[in-house]
Length: 332
Image (cartoon, rainbow, N blue to C red; front, side, top):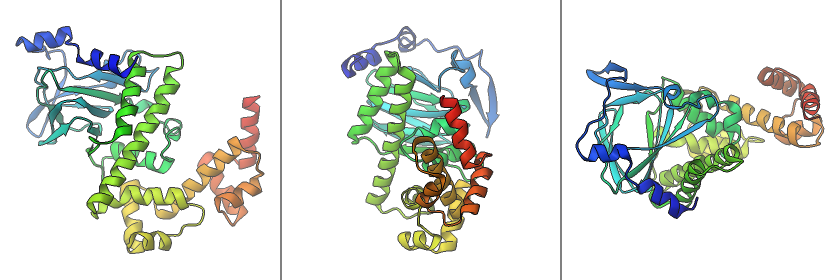
């Protein structure tokens, strides 16, 4: 499928949309509702909307035009992308206008609705079933594991989490290309469709990280939340040698404040995040290189061999040498 064919497909008026445009309202009697802050809220489950729940990590749908949506919640992580036109989403009681090219990343359990779309307004939803958000899934993303884990923690932890992010991506050329290619693969799958979808999705997330960083730099936002992703990127790039003092100096923050900020938003201390990066890098080298364990220890920045062995076993439940032997046997 080409981008032109994709546009034609998404622009077509479906049978349901034709009914909504003529004034027929959808029947919601079969859905379950719950009462939240005095409002009847419809509940959606990923398992109910996807007959292939156990097989695919993604579900893509175009939002129906010409209809009212009730306030609703769902148990999946949702990306909504304004493919064309514009819309208004009401999230947690506040209206947010989406322009063409903008994207919202929304947490499970967030109460929201979408005001009626016109014929020119095409909004696409990508649902991520939480069952599939494993470490293996996020390790495939081009943004490193720390950034990926930040997104997971932010949307799955009830404390200190943001319900959504609205990305000012309307002028981002690459995100548009990545989204279009992802949708083309979804609607016209190839033989290797799952690998292609996973890889394109990793590019989408990586570009969202870039967009967020660029936006924060341009607007010079220095609220507490604005530091989190840049701090995590700093650790990703400097894990071999960085210290808490180095990071604090780089961002002009008090070391204790920086440490507390990371702990609040990621659940891990600075040293724990650095250790995770070192161990993840060591594991990748055990999988993909012929370096000896001692060479790997030096490469990732550990000075104490015994300490590395202890931390590696704590994290992965096996010693590094045994881990490599085990993987070699599996490959054989």
